[in-house]
Length: 154
Image (cartoon, rainbow, N blue to C red; front, side):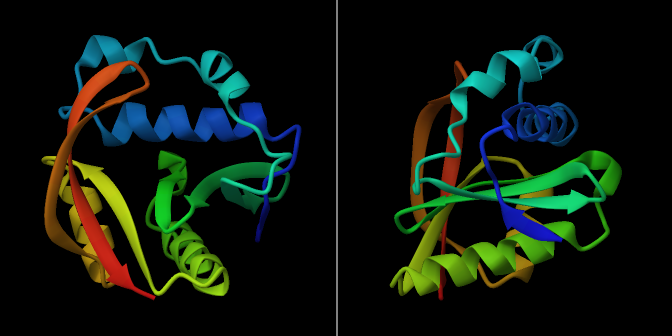
């Protein structure tokens, strides 16, 4: 089941986000950095009371197991708890995120992925996204990363 994130979801969302980074970004970011990520440190950065950015969560019973965050014309985040990978949760979240962006009047959408993230590249290409040639260096959660931009018609 998918639903909008609400106040009170901050820590469960942060747990998913941190676990997804710790498993999914292993080998792409320094191990020491990933090992030191804490959901309790990340949770205060989330605000679900404002309309944007908009975060959808996937729930399995009472447990949040995935999230997708959008803002403007961008998919800002899409993460699924690694224990739930391969169950279609990411596909459901990205479809709902795309529908939300289209419903807000966006004709195209963008997202950024870490250079070398083959898993993300396969996932997004399967959903119709493609690199558009733009690249950047950004600071994300205090670490500098190289990213590539993907674009998709909605």
